[in-house]
Length: 433
Image (tube, rainbow, N blue to C red; front, top):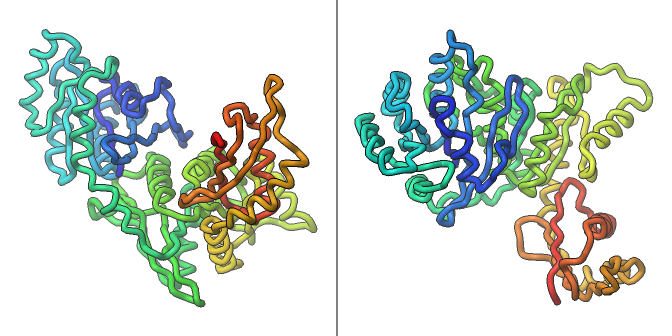
């Protein structure tokens, strides 16, 4: 679920964004786009999780395109978000552009909530009542800086979100998402695997809300392919292409079991690719890196090895990830990519017996125990895998709070060495015995 915050500059969109996410910093989960940074973060309220999009950086300062850019921002939020929060400023009153935005929002079927910001004293509370004239049934008065009223706003937002159990009626099939920058070949890859062409451009409003899901049943493999390119509206994409690609990529990541990060062989790994990789790791998704357009690269004896070495140097420290060189155009190794994805899925869902974990790792720990802390010896006595949807392990010891990060890294390396977790992020927790 995506919640888009729209409104004029300086009404407090970023402050509200930070308030909802419980962050003080202005930059949270930022993705460096083609033109300017976009902000995207996760929020939990009333037992429901959703994503918040701050479209604040969407509007240029030049006066000649100011109003056009505002409308573009609102339409982008309507297109990409499930719920729109329209933020206005009580100190400036209702402006002409506010009325324009209200008209645009009233024409959409998506839930729209009006939030009147900077209502932090009695006089402003009285003044805020004029905003009821904009015609929003759900209107809330708040102060982003102090946080007053934000709870009521969040209550209203979560009322529009279905219960998690309804949303998480999982398909039993593994979900494989193709993510990456625009024009890297995501849709072409899905088309090639399915053996059919899929339209990716349409003028039909509302079709861009979700990524494209396709069931794949070929060669004894059953899975769901998710194309994050989605279906774009020609009249609103233009220079905001990167904004759309980021929103859809993260949405697909959340739905997927395995993330296929596609990069362009000519461009190599760029900042946007690293950001998407970081989001996949943070969400504990399986990962495969596909280097597309490899057919266009001049090759020598060690071209692929050298490219992979440079790539892994950039993505460090998480380098235990499969890398495959493909050509969607020539259909080179595209089915091998699916095999890799399914292997990563199997590794991600594997369960290791507690007896096996302890037999192998306790011997390693005995040879290389954790460093002591101020004369206190740390003794790890027991290890078990936790019942999570990704590999997570609990190490029971006498002083869990004093285990150093470097030793955590050592244990992760030992897990990877003893059990195959290539392409799978691992979580390690230390608990009191």
